[in-house]
Amino acid sequence: METLFVLLLYINGDIKEHMAFWENPETTEWVEMGMSGCLAMRRTLKRQGWRDSEGGRYACAKKVVETRIDFEGKKVIARIVE
Image 1: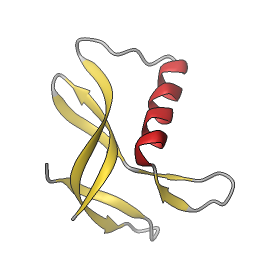
Image 2 (image 1 turned 180 degrees about the horizontal axis):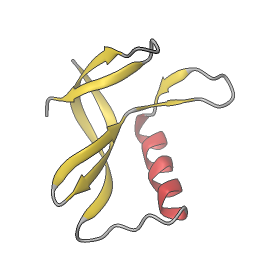
Image 3 (image 1 turned 180 degrees about the vertical axis):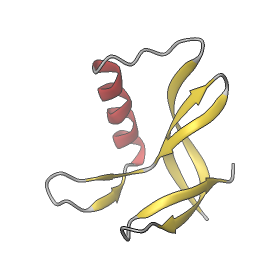
Image 4 (image 1 turned 90 degrees about the vertical axis):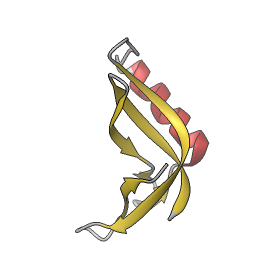
């Protein structure tokens, strides 16, 4: 279990999607986003047309998560413990 900053997609109050890692385009390494990366991703989504609404919103939050290694060998969130 780890504590990570996670970008969460809430739809009607339920978490539908989440991410805490991204691929660095310069090094092609899979890295933790952190708070600044999370906020940058949220801003990018907003610039590309996503608007928070009554039904859905993106939020950055510090969460306790369980991680695992996926089929590509990348570290991903298995579940949010909260």
